[in-house]
Length: 285
Ligand code: GUN
Image (cartoon, rainbow, N blue to C red; front, side, top):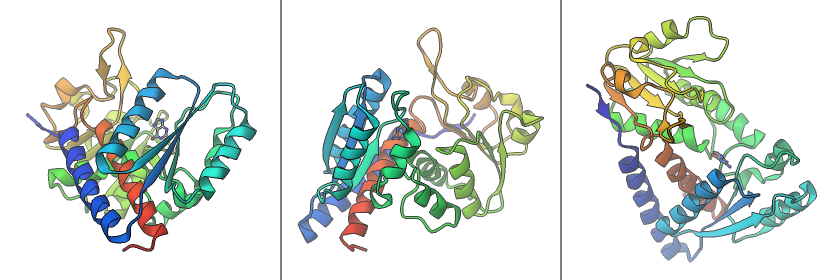
């Protein structure tokens, strides 16, 4: 039976550390730390994410600035807002909640965010820095996963690491972070010929594809660390991951639940990136 990795507890610890550091930085340097959150349209899931991000800002002592724009906002209007936020000294981080309505050019919007304020680490400059291992910000989900793996005490160095999924937001940066820690990394995707065979070799298995229960217990090596990034809504309304938790927990040594695993970490790492952005701006070590 696997140990369950408690993402809520790890996230609470990270946020507490950030809150303490924020209080110290504010007291010593007399600065405020601000995160601008931009949401376009009224997607209910995006609204929940944005509310949670604002709540986390309060918890750690940041000021959040919400810009809720109507669904028919033009590209020009959105770019103008980002330009204003790029120049605003009260704003240390800018987050544009994705997905954007179809008529907007997501890539152009991401590229318009100043890399110094790009707390999602989606801008090509920040993506490139991750590749060469010289980064200020890490994308929030992979960074959160690294914290969860660290919380198990399992060393990554020399281990077989398999990442299922090759998205720009999770799979690709995740693979780089594991590589930077000297893991031997395999990236699997929808065209991989024998997924089960690759998964069975993994000491550390990260699954981020958005297919409910794709990875089952028979595909998991005895004693593996299993990280499930999936967040799928089943027909019965229940949430489930990309890993079949019930069979996987019989094989893994550590496993993340869904919900309560990776999810809570993402916002904690967003707070960490925002604090980092503020420290860099003010030249604080
Ligand atoms: N939508 C879903 N996840 C994310 C995220 O990590 N960042 C942003 N900006 N939008 C998202």
